[in-house]
Length: 283
Picture 1 (cartoon, rainbow, N blue to C red):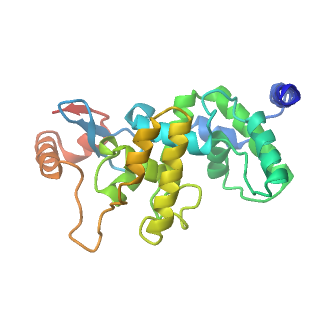
Picture 2: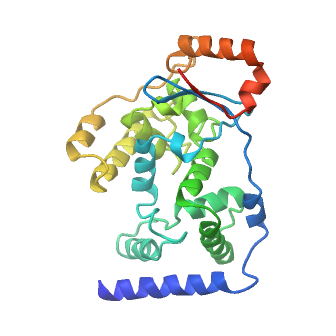
């Protein structure tokens, strides 16, 4: 154990030295630096829960504070357990993956959420050591430009969640017929399980695989201390319930009420102004 800690620290130092070296930046970072999403109007219920968003963009972007804590915990637990502690690359995650690959003949990866975000932004999916090393360098640099919360929100807004849905707000509406602020524990765990393999864990095409993956997420949440094992056990017994798109198009949570709020705002202030002014509407 002691030797692993030492090796992990050495790996971290090496990465830090590469980042501090002049000329280590890549042009892809400028794309992230210039990233300024359009503003939009949020609608909250009387308890302060986000119930809908009025936006002029098809991809609905969220700030970290809009993301349910259950989804944050679920994604971190199953994808990157030390996300809030590492510096973009996880030396211990790399060592753990190497150990599992050697001893258990697994194909476990060691990419952090930050590295996955870099891969999504750069669109570079080459299976090469040079690509992986570049990805690691960019990930560490990204951590110097943005807070953990900003990086998590970027990832949550970029993430592919199957059925041509990108970002958790769009996916929440598509799969569950509600805004992300209304998702419960089981729904958050379901979404957090999809990114590993969106086709394999598609809630419509492979509901059984999706449910098994969701249950793994719930178990990991319990192991990490985000929920109790009793909560996980109860949640794992619940069925997978998603919107039936063959029926009449579903509406967000409290859909009729939200429609009235939308109608009032559009009539009073104009649709484009409401969709792009970045207001917080408390009802």
